Image (tube, rainbow, N blue to C red; front, side, top):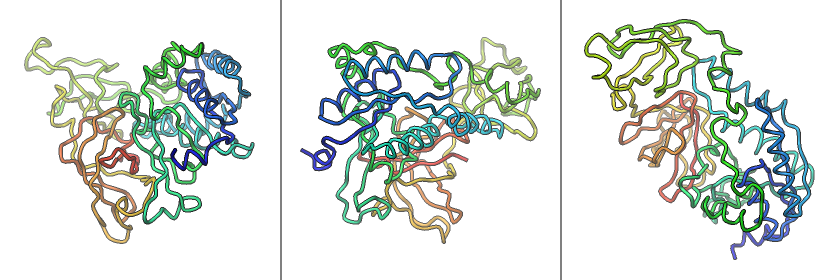
Length: 386
């Protein structure tokens, strides 16, 4: 048995239970491994009332598997750290990623902190991702007690959630467990059914969790005033109006806007239009015709707030005293579930990073995350696209 797993035997583990099948099975697996498991439902901001139903589902699962269960109220913290982040990001003209911020600030932020303060040794979630303790020759000096923890993509490539976890640190990973990393989703549902868990066939949540059936645009318009602006083509031809650059994102196809096709040709001869760029100052949105239009692609991307999960040996791109210190060959993605693409990563003297892809990448949106990996599937790090 792996040494790291032996050390984690019979430890107190607080499991974040969302009321879904994944976290339900995670709690059950940890109980079966002999841990002292406590289930916790994190009450966060929610618009459609489903949080009450989810909390009840989580409570019933905890009762079924025989573990203590608590509800911790993080609603105000979620509003302050996640919802406000999303609103202000859109107001600034970018496309923020609230899922990344929720993981950083809530699940592996205040939940981890409160769990440890309450007596937990570890926290666990229903994320599909693998965690390994590495025996590196040169350990990461940030890692507790000289141990190096590495995050890897999940066994189930369709459910892998490593893209949303690039902000995690060695100190956080030292207190984390991810029981589902080696399992595939159909097997997880099968285990839930076999155990009689009522969440076994519960549908997965879609989109931004706290919005429910409310669209992002409708939610944002409660905080950001509409302002009419021009829709233009990549050739500069004005073809209609939009309600404000804040409500659109790069690559968006379904447009809540009034526009007509350019004068040349008719609708039957036209391909779909996609948002290629935005100019907040001029309040213009530029549309490109066809999903393969060159304006929808970028080869070089600058990234801020870069985090390297471990910095020992081959995962270093040097310091920040010289421009473009070192080049690291990586595989990277700029959207969730996007296939990984070969790229080179370097660091600028201002501390930002630059990804240069071998093949241009489509729909690169400022505010979203770029995440880079090793050939073995290890999450090297990530950052926010400028």
